[in-house]
Amino acid sequence: MSTPDLEQPLDDDELDALHELLVSRAEDDSLVLDGVHGLVTAVAIGPEAVAPSEWMPLVLDAGKPFPSTEQAEQLVTLLLRLSNMVVHDLDRLAFEPILSQVETESGDVAYSARGWCEGFGMGMDLRAAQWDQALRDDLHCQELLKPVLDLAADEGVFGNDEDGEDPTPLSEAEYEAALNGLPNAVLGIQQYWRDRDEVPEGGAMPAGVAEPTGSEGLPRRRAGRLLH
Image 1 (cartoon, rainbow, N blue to C red):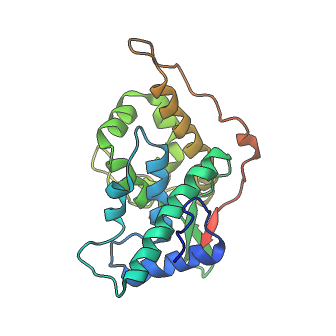
Image 2: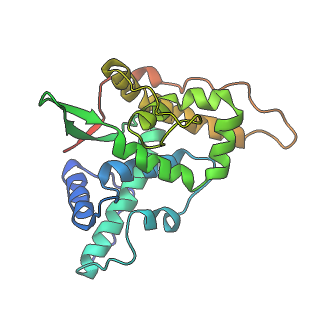
C-alpha cells in the first residue's frame, strides 16, 4: 500500500468523502466538515503551533471504534490533508471558509457560518490564554476578528454578552458582509500573530497590522466552498 501524500490538497470528491465519513460518526454536538475546517483554520493561524495529536481528538471520538482499520486510516489521512490544505490556501492568499447550507423560513437556501464558527472557537480554546489576552487587551485584534466574532455571536456560538443579554441579531446584509469578511479576517489574524512572534525581546509591540498583500484579489462572495 502506497504512502498517502499528505501535502496533496483535497478535491471536491474527497471533501465530500470526508464529510460523509464525519457524518457517519457524528453525534449531536460533533463537528462535521464545516466545523473541522473552522477548527484547523484557528489552529493554522493561532499564536503557537498545535500538533494534530491535540486537535484531532476534538474531531474523532476515541470511545467510538471504527468498523475497520482502513476507514480509520482513511479518515485520519483526509483530516491531515485538510489541515495542510488550509495552510497552503493561507500561504497562497486563497483562503475561503467551508460553510454549510440552511433552509430559510421562506424556503430559500442560505449559507450558515455556525458550524465553522463552532470549530474555530474550539481551535481558539486550545490556546485560550493567548487568544483571551489578545482579545481583552488589544483593540486591533478585536477589529481584525470582528467578522468571526459577529457571526459567532449571531449564531449563538459564544452565548450571551458580558451583560448576560443576547446580542442584537445581524441583519441579512450584515450577516452577508461578515461572511464576505471572513477571508480577510483570517489572513489578518494570521499576520497579527506572526508580527507578535517577530517582536524582539524587550521590544515594543507593532502598532498595527497591514492588510495582507494581495488581499484585494480575494473572492468577494457570500460563501466559500459549499457544504451541502
